[in-house]
Image (cartoon, rainbow, N blue to C red; front, side, top):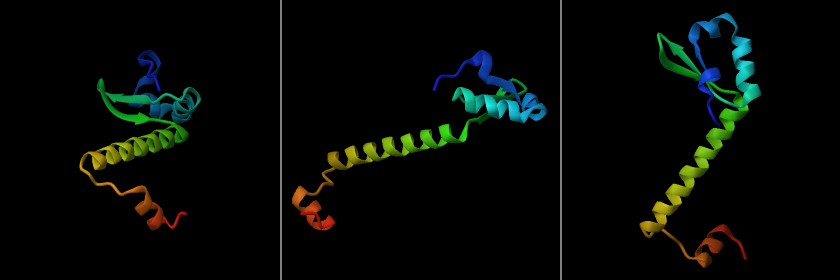
Length: 89
């Protein structure tokens, strides 16, 4: 996801005037839109599918990082123990 600052940074007042246009742009471009107030970023508008995809990717990355930490700390089980626990032959 790449932000085009010339197109994807808009004042909050523009969202108030035409919210459908802004939401539609976020969905069509698959890029988040940064809302500003008095020149400062205050919120992001993002299409729902893109948000869900980003959230899923973040959960996956966190799970991988946790798995790597567990291995480093010796929190592992043997393949046979895992199969027994999961009742896999």
